[in-house]
Amino acid sequence: MPLKGLSRRHLRGRRGVILLSLAALSLTLGGAALANNPDTVGPSMLLPWVALLAFEVGPAAGLAASVTSFGLFLLLESENGLTISPTFVSGRLASFALIGLGLGVAGRRLQASERRSRRLVEGLPLVMYVEDDGGLTYISPQIEELLGYPLTAWQTEAGLWRRAVDRRDRERVIGLYSAAVAARTPFECEYRLVGANGSIVWVRDSSTYVGNGKGAYRQGFIVDVTLQKESEARAVRNAMLMRSLIDGTVDGVTLTDREGRIVIANQPMRQFAAELRIPPEGLMHERLLAIEPGVADRERYAGRMRELASDPDTASCDEFALREGERVFQGFTKPVVGAEDEYLGRVWTLREVTEARQIDRIKDALVATVSHELRTPLTSIIGYLELLGTSGVTLGDEDARYVEIVRRNAARLQHMVEELLFVARVDAEGLSLDLDNVNLSELARDAIGSALPLATAKEVALELEALPSARACVDAKRISQVLDNLISNAIKFTSTGGNVKVTISSKDAAVVMSIADDGCGIPRSEQPKLFERFFRSSSTNHLPGTGLGLTVVRSIVEAHGGSITCSSDEGMGTTFTLSLPVSTLATDLREASAPTELELLTP
Image (cartoon, helix red, strand yellow):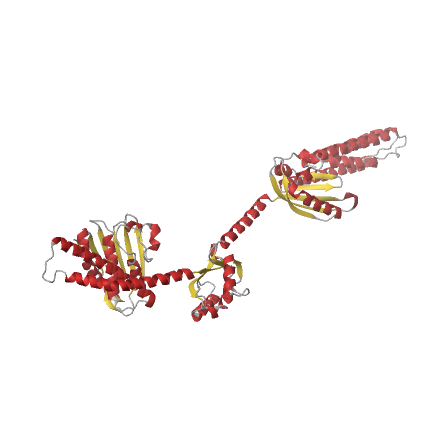
């Protein structure tokens, strides 16, 4: 029964108790009036009904009823010959008054406690109910907000709860509940209820059996868990999507804890494990170490696995080849750190790059072959071009122009061949350096001097801002090659009337050189690819070039233990910055604190 209905029943019950008390008092007083013997009906016979009336109505009414009923009793009994003494009146009246006041106060307190309990129940974020053998006797008003059915419906419509259970859950839930009722055992279940407007509400229903015998009943509560169920459904869906995502990748992916125990492994990783015969048990680094006998470079591979085992915070990217089958793999691992530096685990990825390495080998072989095959005929062409005009025969203007075009393009082709050979040699043998204590400011000044004719032809201003002596231990020939490449590129990609500035400074035991132009710039999306082989920016496709110049530059700089970076804004120019370590072979750096020299070389 709804709480409001329960309140009405309680009100009707109070009225019945009050009427019963008044009727009993009237009958008792009537009996006292009709009785000829005063001892037949004593004043103590009034006390139970006065107490009951005081408990239900309150202390004031109880006191009034006590005084009134006792006064009427005295009046009636005095006519029957009852001897009324002051002691008798005061003693009995005090008893009546105390009982009326005391039980009135107790009744009021009990009613206040009941009201507080009802407000507490009504304020809870759940629905409370009580059911006995005859059906539902109480349900809290929150049910109306939960499902939309009016409170009176739960009191008047038999079986409303069973009809409200979603048909998909009805048989299961009613079966479980009926079994719990029959066995007088606790019941707990999650199921769906259908609201008055057809909406679906997930609830958790818990109830327990209370008491024994005739007064036994079942009490419980219903909690709305719709949001929790929706969250669980989203979590399950997200987990399925995540599993589908990682299983759909080409790379093998595994997540382990700090010690190396596997938490997640996707389908490609399981496939790789089967193909490479990686053991199915053990920590991740132990499993990987188990295939060390089949790896080409066993010592390096085993050393890296031991390093990863000893330091779970190490990030690593390695490539290893198998002895048989010529398969090549790239392995990557790094710790996964969440908010507040919480260690979530370690991710491991495995990618097969066999085909890519085969393509690289074919491409390198092709580049080396073509470069060598082109070099000899180019040398002959350039040599014979230089002989033209030296035999005493003067070429005409048109022939001289043709020869110059051939010479220029042959030189360009020779430069391309040299770059191809350089890259191929670096890949095959590495880059050998002839290190010496070199004044980089002088190298920059020489490089600008060499580029001055080209700058003059394009009307581009060249500017040098350098320390008097920025010395470092470098290969002068190779660093000159770097400067020539970067400065010529800057001039090439700068419009007529533009400016190219070379700056040399020192920072943290390193010499920093920057080459800045105000040319066309490089799109930001293309900048990560600048140093890749044969890559050419879309902003420079209209200009001649091989796409190898920056690859050569980076190889030389990194061979010196330095670094090179690029910053550019499209349409605003480009700046290449390279840093070269001074090394202990360089002279004292006190000269680096001297004032810089500024040179402006205009066409």
